[in-house]
Image (cartoon, rainbow, N blue to C red; front, side):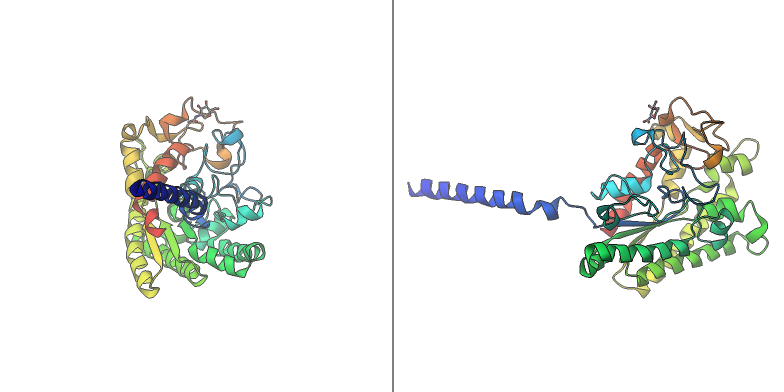
Length: 358
Ligand SMILES: *[C@@H]1O[C@H](CO)[C@@H](O)[C@H](O)[C@H]1NC(C)=O
């Protein structure tokens, strides 16, 4: 009898306990892994910051957004979601990471993070200048303005926690290679490939350190992809067979390996900060070389138009048709991956690098 009573008592106690847990734990157990994600970069991470600025590097018209909710062209350089969206949703924050310049953002949207990325930006200030888009230093100015808004919404104390615990992501460099160094004489006459890689590493390192000085503790820098293998670079520099453009890839790999070393130096200078180079070169190269392994059929052409050159204003529904089945394509236009490719890349980045930051 006594045993029975104590058994009933412990079951009862256990039930109360699990009820308490069910009520109290979720906010910490199932909530977002970081309070916000804050992104700087180029078209890979741009959810529409270029929509209202005077530049040809924009895409807020069909067929962009073909597979976005409501087939809406938001300014994302893709048929659907871009990496920032996948990162924000994997972290349990929200389904889409909005563009900072969007004037309809709710207070909740602001405090859970935005993207300042602007298609056409680079580490090299010349890259953003030639494209007339929002340069990295200008993205930092917007970030400072954003911080004031978050303080006004959340209060100083909570804002400080948000800024310290947020995940910061930086993704630029492709356009320095593809738009500035190779096609123009602006840098080539003074810098060979290794010295231009060093120049980019210097700018990248300065940017990361500025973020640290502004309070960032967790920073992921996405490396430069095998930009010589994207369809437009094959067309422009890959010869008659449209192979991967080797010098472009050399510059990308040189930047990645040297920046990795530099990041170790920065880490030593700022102990306690979590800094990671998220290298996407190898995985994207593999997807391009062996598309079938990943469920694709075409990797040397994009889905938009001929797939060999059309990007941004050249990929529009007036002059360019869309491929019959986008799910077979690694690239959406001649420069940017499809949503399906981005999903694979972010899943990989998350497992390999992003989880180290949270
Ligand atoms: C993308 O949208 C088109 C047009 O609505 C549709 O035919 C296609 O199945 C969609 N593809 C994917 C991968 O969602």
